[in-house]
Image (cartoon, rainbow, N blue to C red; front, side, top):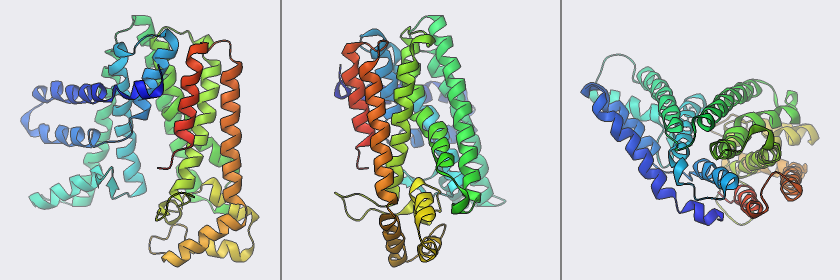
Length: 353
């Protein structure tokens, strides 16, 4: 089974998500149903569903069988993703998500339209934090609904606990890095965030949850975990390149990460290698939502001119090559499953959006 075959399960995953909200709606008082509906709309708004597909991939790698028994666990990762995105958007003051308003902004607008008492902004933030929290019981419930032996479900739940904890650690490090001057952030600091915040819950934990539900013991997951961690870091480095507006085959890309002031490897490396004039050009844009397009382009020129873009591309290639070499030499990953993992690496790292 290849990656394209696994993506054909997307309608079934969407159906699982709709069903979880549908089962819960009659259980809550009518006054709370509009809040639940807001979560449902947010989760079903779209997204690549790659984390869910990786749960299916992990199960197939473990068993060689079709992954229908773990569709609910795949949906669980989408509930978790909603949880993270809702809270991320509050932290980042994001206005939009997946073609619609971020949830805290949508709730604030509801407050304004209804002319309720108090601050619309505070209402939006408070309700969105709580609605994000509400996705956790959906996540746990969906994991426990997987059709797998009790011991396998318990192992998957333990992996979920690890994933949640490490993602929170990564988020804390990311917030901390944002308080530091670019020159005080090291490459190691950036990669630690990517390892904890992105690699774990985007690649490693989904694959591991699927494999654990398929009956693979923890002791046989070292190669899969190493592969997933390297690919997950490379995935986030690619995201940083795209987020700064760099794409050789596409024009008109935004540079949101720069005006949001994110301490990416691109920025940290350019700051380290640049001249005083280069750093001035970067500083004019970092964290400045009113930066002019000309200033943004000058900052991107600094990233190119200092070799920082080239360095990030080299690190992406190195991590990807190490990951695929680990798979090729592995004795714990079934030979029939190795092409699937190469597909995963290719899809995550060579994407254009």
